[in-house]
Image (cartoon, rainbow, N blue to C red):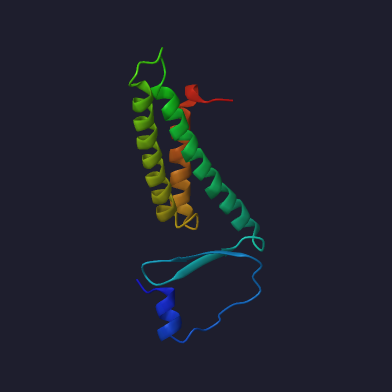
Length: 136
């Protein structure tokens, strides 16, 4: 994939648009196309970005619920329990970070509407499947 530095150093950059208020991105696609959003200038981008960020939060909530579920019914502490708890936390934290990265990559940071919709539905189903571990 062509890097921005290579474009600037070896290419002849051309300004193709102006008037943006605040851009987020850029996201380079495999075909060389560039995507970015102008958040304040586009209400749809605002809603889209908010939904994308909310799904990040929801993914984190899924892993918090998984952690609560894993401690369900645990009574008392044996000497190895804190070590076991830390291992579980570390494993779930790493898994969460991997999912967060995959989510951003597959949705192009929320710019791919179809992928974003699939992820949002999947995460909502995950939350629903663990609703008994919700903490208000």
